[in-house]
Image (cartoon, rainbow, N blue to C red):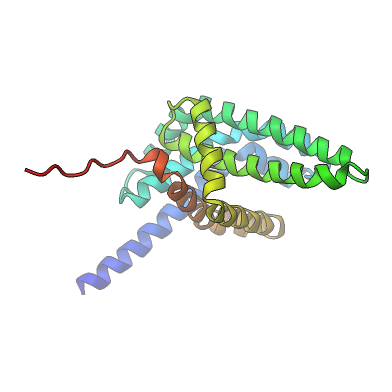
Length: 225
């Protein structure tokens, strides 16, 4: 009976954290959510690029909530979110702004090369750089969520290296993000109300494992007496 009660409690706790996290995600990313419901992404992409940095602290705070939940802390979701938002606001917005500038430059270059002879050589390189930029930006937000005072230059070096080294986890995270984007485009209410938190948790878990070598301090070997 105790084991059954523990399982039921864990299920309800997880459901509660998921619902609250979805709500906080919507509130933290309200500018992008508003654009998604009121504009067409293909025509309004400059607005998306300008707005994305404003939503970065909310995403970092959501990752902090997931980290706390993974560690067994489920009682202070709002407190964890607020504390992480305040701590990560400046570095998260700066990090995302730099990433968006890089993505816009790469996308414009790819559009200019499309249909030209040089595109046969340039487009694969530009596509690879775009994917690497997205992966690095994602890992950087997970890093900022746990180490908001870390120098962004060091964060960039570590994230680029680990994104390439553990490419299989990077690919899995990007596929999950693509799935979330498809659900959001087809069923926004289901995506924001139910699917966002579980899928983002998978992304966070993959990213956290990828960053384990950078975020977790090495444990000293026990000394012999």
